[in-house]
Length: 332
Image (cartoon, rainbow, N blue to C red; front, side, top):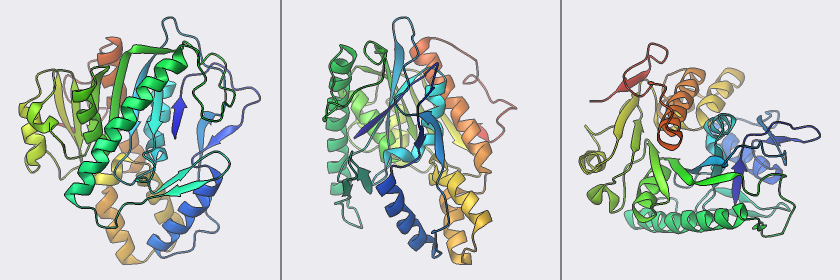
C-alpha cells in the first residue's frame, strides 16, 4: 500500500483525508489505550490537511518526487505532519507501507494486515526487513514510471485523480525515512541511482552502505542523544560519504520526535490522566521539546534539503545555524 500526496489548486467537492483509515483507526485507538493505560473511547484522531482525489496542480515538466519509508514496524501515516507539508511545497510525496512488517496496514474495503514480526527483533530480522524494503522501494519506483506514462497501476483499477498522469518528474527523485526508514533510504540509494538525494531521520545505518558510502547528497538528523559520537554506523557512513553531507541534531528531542507521535502524545498528556510511569516513558521517546517547534524545524530543513538537491533552489538555511530554529544544532 502507498499513498500519493501532491499539490492541488482545487479541492471542491473532495473529502478531507483522515489521518488513518477507519478500521486502522479503531485498532490503533485500542493499542494506544492499552499502552497509555487509559481509555481512548472519547478521543478523536485528527484529519489531515489533504483532500482525497483532488486534481493535481499542473507544473511544467512535472513535480519532483520524494519517497518516504517509516520506522521498523511503523505505519506510513506516522510522518504525516512532515509529508503533507512537503506536498504543499510542490513535491509529490509517496509514502510506503511495508506490509507484514508494519503494525497495521488497511487495504481498500477495510481488510487489515497486521505485523508478523517477532516482539523482540534480532539483527537478522532487521536485515531481512531492510532487504524487503529495498525491493518494495524499487517496485514502487517502477510502478510510478508506469503511472506517469498513463497506466492505471491501482490493483483494483479505481479511478485515479485528474492530472496524475505525467505529473511526476522522475528525473528528480529523493527519499527520506525515520529510524529503519532512514537506513532504507541510504541502502536503496546505493542500489538505485534513480534516487538523487536522501535523508535519515535518527536511524542507525544498517546494511552494506555504511561501508561503501554514497556519492550523492545525504542529510543526517538525530535526536538529542544520538549522532556520530555514539553511533559507530553513523561515524563509518559519514566517513564514506563522497557527496554533499550534513549532520543536524534536534535539541531536547527523543527518537519519536521525528514522527506524529510527538504532537499526538503531547496533546494526550494535556487531555488525559496518565500514570506517572507512562509519562516518564513517553518523555524518553519524544523528548521535552515543544512538538509544534519540533515539527516546524523539521519541515523547514527537509524542505530546504530537497529544494536544494532536487530543484537547485538554495535558501541558505543549510549553510549555518539559524536564529529562527534555535533547537537545530549543526554538528561539525
